[in-house]
Image (cartoon, rainbow, N blue to C red; front, top):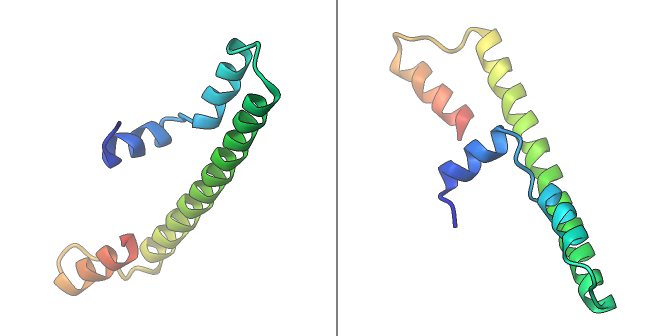
Amino acid sequence: WKTPAERCFLWLGGFRSSEILKLLANQLEPMTERQMLGIESLQQTSQQAEDALSQGMESLQQSLADTLSSGTLGSSSSGNVASYMGQMA
């Protein structure tokens, strides 16, 4: 329901779908056992995806920091720009 760019900005802003699920679960009572298990499963899946995204972001930030600190990124060389773009990819 959101574009990838919008989801990226929401993520960077601190939005976490698992938190919404926790809030909703309390408001959706009474639920059957099957519904509760489904919500719990969705929460776990969401949390795992969030953890993976966080690790990926940390890795990207570290890689970019390493590239910037090594001095291989320059503003005048197209080769350095290509190296930077490769790091971002």
